[in-house]
Amino acid sequence: MGTSDPGMANPSCPLHPPALPRRGFVKFLLGGGLLATFASFIYPVLRYFIPPPVANLGVDEVVAAKVGELKPNSGMIFRFGSVPGLLILEADGQTYDALSATCTHLGCTVQYRPDLREIWCPCHNGIYNLNGGNVSGPPPRPLTKFDVHVRGDEIYVSQKAEA
Image (tube, rainbow, N blue to C red):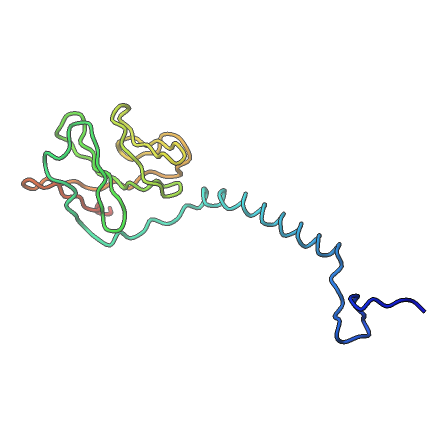
């Protein structure tokens, strides 16, 4: 005869569906945790080898600054459409360089370091030269370089013409 517990699932009773065994539930949790851990390791590796595509900037030319705003061997961030740009006045006080200020690794905003005359990404210590070429760190490709034109007292930055 046996005792019947009203809280126990009874396969012959339609009011109590069969319970998920504890062992199956633990396996489900462990499997899900392992899958999540695996994905968290694979995602950054894939992002490194397959970086996000370069977005269309939406503008052809912007006024980045006025002549005299920058001291020699200094840089400033400006808006180039929807992305930040970096305008640099080299140490000679005559040559301007403009590049995208978005790191090609994970999209952080880069900074100009006048003491070392290099462009630095503070997120993962990526380093670029003044031409935008990646020197060290995790960035997979160079920064986008822009054309710079001085007209009157304004400094214009435009996208490079594709060759």
